[in-house]
Structures are given as structure tokens and as C-alpha cells.
Image (tube, helix red, strand yellow):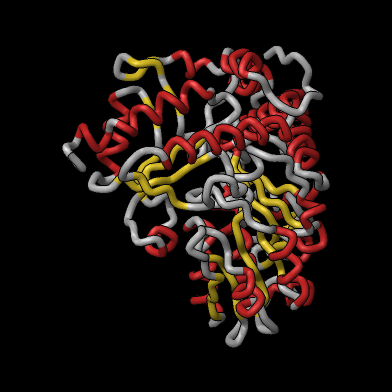
Length: 433
């Protein structure tokens, strides 16, 4: 990777072309066409530095962490904990406030099941702040990914709490007036995404967090679509918990991150139990390590964490502010181009309003799966379906959409190739003649 000047604000096309050489898969051809990868919102591609970091660990340092006294174990443990420090610094928090999980879904479930355990009396006096029961309320939004909705449905069912919802406007933004009415004295937890994985809407995290804290509720942020794409300071955002996944930010699959304020993690009862997260065990009792180890039972995802740290270093070297600006320009190009194509309906904020570098759209008369298959024949990879957000799609009267999502390695030419292909979809299927 060679960048002209990483302190300048905007990435140039030449720099992006240089970055692309770091991603081996971008040289692939699909169905005889150069790969145009517009599915980074689901899983991003990995630069050589990330691939090499995992290979190096496997070849030279592979061992269990926190368990052995031999040299390889010490090396593996040091690399594993250095990775935690690297990721913590990336999002502006402390080393002991980062818990490794398998993905963001597990991270959110960890909080939900730990609160369920607290509600059942586990964790002692320190965990009382997490206890839920009848009359308590959990608040989510209508735009949530299922991973930030279903765990709270289940927590409400287990504890007798109620689930309340902040609705969407027709423009694809949260109704903040309704949010102020929904979040009230009975609210114990407010859960919301930073950036919608369908609409591209960027939510006002500070306002939502302030509303939660004003009634004494905890705030949990789904940062899956923000951590990879824009500078993120979780301490400054003042959220209590946050979750994101490695595979969406140039890292490996199988590793995710839970952030929790240190005092909350230390009070939260564990979710998974077993080896490596204990201090003393008898046949009828166990005592647990402090956070974050108390939430990391069993053999850990060591090489994946090391790969994620390499991804974070790569993003730092490019500059997240520059990545964000590049993707914002691509997002505007996507929306403007789609808006000019007859029979296309784009969900989410209108052109000119802030949105992430993605666009989900409905093609009149053609199912999203058919759109995706047509594009794939041309080597263009997009996402089709409900994107794990059925309530959001139901809100806008569609069952499925096609989503194109960009990243730092996406070029304007690729966006134009995609737009030209979408313009041919309805004629190809004989619709709208």
C-alpha cells in the first residue's frame, strides 16, 4: 500500500487504485467479467496484510493463550492481548473494555443473556442494575438488524419486560419526537444502530444516548456499519455497550467485539461459562475472573483477533476520515444514478441528505433475487433479500431489496458499471416496455 499523503482529507482515484493492489481477490474474474464487488456491507474483502498476519501466527506462534508457560504460549498471549489493545485504541476505549466474541450477533446476545442471568438473581448486588422484570421496558428502533432485535425480544420474554419501538419516518430516519415519548421512566435499555444496513441512514447517536441516560437507562450501539467506515470514539459517544464485527472491516470471519464500560462489564454476570474465565472452582461453586476474561470462556479466536488488529492498523494507515469521505462520494453517485433509472425506488435518505456509502433499492416488476442473478452474470456482486431487517422492509411495503455497498477499494468506474447494468434490468426481463 502506497499513499501519497495520509494527512490529506480526500482519497484520490490514484490512491484507491493503489490500495486495490493490496486485495488479491479483486483481481478475480466472475462469469468472464472483472469482479465488481459491491457487497462489503455484508462481508468486506481482506488486504494481504490481514491474510499474512493470520498465516504468520499459524506458522510461527500458534498456541493456546493464557494457559501455557512455554515460549509459544507466551508469544501467542502477547499477540492476542496486543490485538485487544490495538482494537480498543481504534474505538477510543480501554484495553479491559474490549471483549472478544465470534461476531457482533454474539456480542449483543452476550449482553442480553447476561442481563437475563442478572434478572434471575445471578451476579449478586453488583448485578442488580441489570435486573429486568414486569413493568420494565426495552426500547429498539424499527430499522434494526435482526441481531439487535431478536435478542431483546427473547430477553423481554424471559423477564416479563416489555419491548417498545421507535418508529421510522417516510424518509427513512428515526422519528425523534416519538423517541422522546417512547423512552420514559420505565425504560431500562435502549438499543439502536449507528448506521442502517439497509437505508444508509446515520442515526443521531448522541441524542439517542442522551435520551436513554436522562431516564437512567443503558445505551447499546450496533456499530457494525460505522466502525469500518468512519472514525468512531465510543467514549465520546458515551454509549454503555457497543458491538461490531471483524469481517465487515477488512478482518477475518469468526471474530467480533463487544465494548462495555469497565464498571458495567465488571458488574455484569457471565454468559458463557467453562475454562479460562474462572479463578476458583469447586464441585458446587465457581468464582469468575474480572472482565474481559470473565466473558471469554474456552479456547479463543486467537488468529482471528490478530487478523482483526492487522485490519485496524491498515485502516488507521489510510485514515478513517478519508475512507468516510470517499464512500460518501460513492454513496451520492449511487443514489443519483439509481434515481435517474426508470422504475427504481431507492429506500432511505434522499440525495443530498447524509447517508452511508450504500443504497438499497426496489426494481418495479422484477424480484430482488432476479436482479441479483442478472448482475452476478455480469460479475457484479450485490446483496439481495431482506438483509436481516424484515420489519424495516415491511415498513416500506417491500419484501426484499437489492443492496449495493461500497468500501475504500470501490472505484467510481465500478459504480458506473453497476448503474449501467441496473438500467438494463427491466428491459432484460421485458418489464416497462
